[in-house]
Image (cartoon, rainbow, N blue to C red; front, side, top):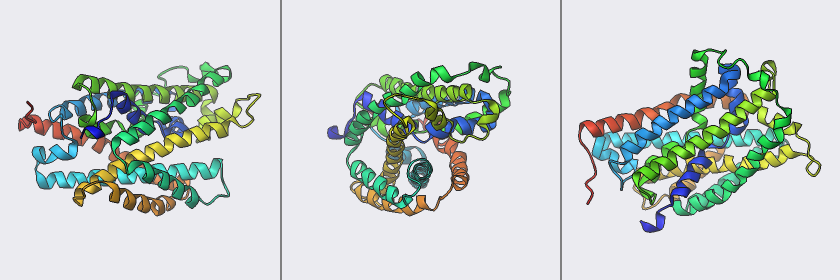
Length: 361
């Protein structure tokens, strides 16, 4: 068990790497479709919901500090119902990984390699993913920490973009109305998903309960700030009318930046984004493989990783256009609140009512 324990800072970067992924390019546009120029408020509101969800997860996990969600669900809700929940979580994580992979393939094809068959990048991405996530969580965490240094490149966007912004574009604040802002927060929730991994990483993190909560909450807060800043910059760069026809506003913003030593800074930005898209795919496929391993009673998750990685390639290739991706992603977005909030909350309430708690010395 000790060889698979992770440090608190590694927990932070696992959550951040999972949350900051596909949404970097499209979240400002997706939220703007609903909440208009107040979409950044929707992202902040979604971040608040994530903090509440994190608190509930910590309260639940703290009752079973040495067990993952899959381990203590049979204790709380019974063997058969817990097995059904494992099936559902496994499917949810697998379908989410397909969405992330297909999103990566579509954006790569449109913006960087329009003449390269998506199958090539699907196989390469799946191969890299299998190589890393077949190992234990400690190896994965080390890679995520290393990859997180690339966040500096993402943050540099803010520095270069300041001179191009017109902050009057976001005024008056709140003009879209509370209903639109609240509805927009539902769209933003999927981009901030990833904090639910705390239910599996809680017993594997070497830290007191309060520290784990601070780390998980801090990671989600960091991701919320990044997404909110990207949305604010997008809304200050484009007019309200322009945003309605710009599905990837962040890339268009980056293309406007002119540097003497770099001609196509947008390609550099997309190269950095690709790392975060792939790590997000890794996280979801790892969680799906972990659940599948339990269902088939395997000694480890390796065989499940190979199987699901192979299945994810044709599944992602079936989603061939942005319209197909929107339709598929809409279904995942509808299911997300159930798995991120409803199920953990219900299990926590049942554990309280039935007074189920792990006996510790």
